[in-house]
Image (cartoon, rainbow, N blue to C red; front, side, top):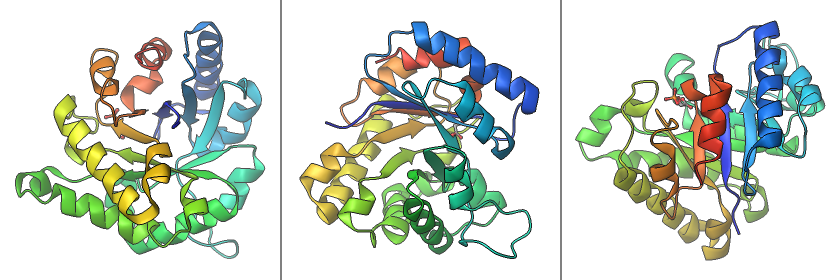
Amino acid sequence: MRKKIVAGNWKMNTNYDSGLELAREINEKVAKANLKGTGIILGVPFILVADVVKNVDKDNIGVAAQNSAAWEKGAYTGEISADMVKSTGAGYVILGHSERRKYFKETESILKEKTELALASNLEVIFCCGEVLEERNDNKHFEIIKRQISDSLFHLSAGEFSNIIIAYEPVWAIGTGVTASSDQAQEMHSFIRKLIAEKFGDELAGNTTILYGGSCNPGNARELFSNPDVDGGLIGGASLKADDFIKIIESF
Ligand code: PGA
């Protein structure tokens, strides 16, 4: 059985104090929430990763970095390696977010390297994919998602791939208040699961968690999560408000 997950992506928000306070507040509320087995992950800025790990109940909440380097170690000033992330106690890293692809020119081949290093450091990877509006309007969205996933992930072994969580995040829905419709999300998630099944077989595809991301909020989470192939969400803006984040977690 695949796991239901709600992950927060704080992006470049909060600072050390306010971020730690938010993590503690979420931790307290999660302890009282009706989780129904839902896994929770907080994707926090690098400066907070180690201390958020120490300040949340690890039985309920996992911690993710939002990026890790495409090199193992060495003279790469300012970079943070997968091994460094792992050494904080974090269990996850978010890779391939559309903002990283857009502003930091991360390509499929760079993400292939990053993914390999993250898996080699025993991190689970939340691998993001998503088309821009023009690609959807040109009816190229399936082709784009297929390329993003297969070029960065389909060289992995089945064992390695079992540590991948996919997050489908249509770029036109991120931070815009425009959510993919329930049907659009289900259609793409089912397409992604079929791709995985063709490559790795039905069992692994059935066990892969596929999250939806893009303007997911307490008002639309329940409908999105009710789709058979939507296993939870990667939440940006709404993950910065503890109450909204908890409501989304309780939307299954
Ligand atoms: P959003 O961001 O929920 O603010 O749209 C989602 C994401 O970018 O992961």
